[in-house]
Amino acid sequence: MAAVVAGAAVTAAVLVGRDDEDRTPASAADPTKPLITGWKTVINPTHGTAFDVPPQWEVLSPDVFSGHTDRKDPDKVLIGHTAPAFYKSKWCSIDGNGDGQVTDVRLGNTGTKGASGAKDTAEIAEKSAPTWVYAAYTQPDKSVVTWDKPKEFTTKSGVRGSYVKARSKGAAQPNRCAGDGQAVVFGFKNSRGDLVAWDFYGRTGVPGAVDDALVMRIMSTVRLAGDPKEPSP
Image 1 (cartoon, rainbow, N blue to C red):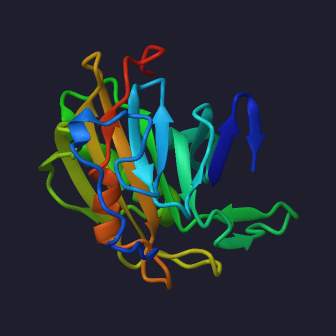
Image 2: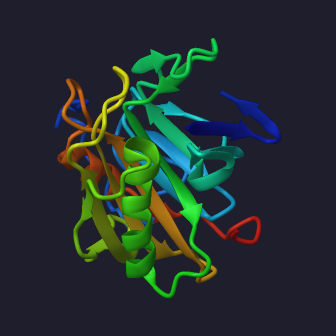
């Protein structure tokens, strides 16, 4: 079950032309301004991070929490992030259990989360990527989720860390919105030295699905945006 929380209230392949040139030098850019001309900047002041998304994406307030709960225990949050951005937020809508409450399924999702408790950037990436896929697309079946080993990565602004790609194959399709998905998580450290993670997850095998090249381009814009405003969770 998806959850979007703003404060205490609960509410229930894009192709980008290559003529969008990257701003350079990235390391000297204002973190509040997009590194890619025409894109939107997503800032998470809690973690002191920023990244960019294409202009078609919807950028939500930094205090919005978006995540997924356990289908067997709706009060248990499996994973989530704040300051999210959505691609096609109403890509598919359905009343899953016939109670009249419609759930919107997004085609693409991205945001930033804290990673306290992880020992390094590789661990948070390797744990989080499969969890996003499971929570969003395959519950209660973990057997259809696979993931790659962590890989080192350096963003345009020089942020170094590790990322992991995960995906599902053969997820159950109990309704027309259900199906396989993928996730990419990039673990790194903010200016305070706290481990944090940028993530993307989205549906696969459907028309318009966000492709790997665009996911990597978005990830390449991840950067630090000043000191964190609050302790990382």
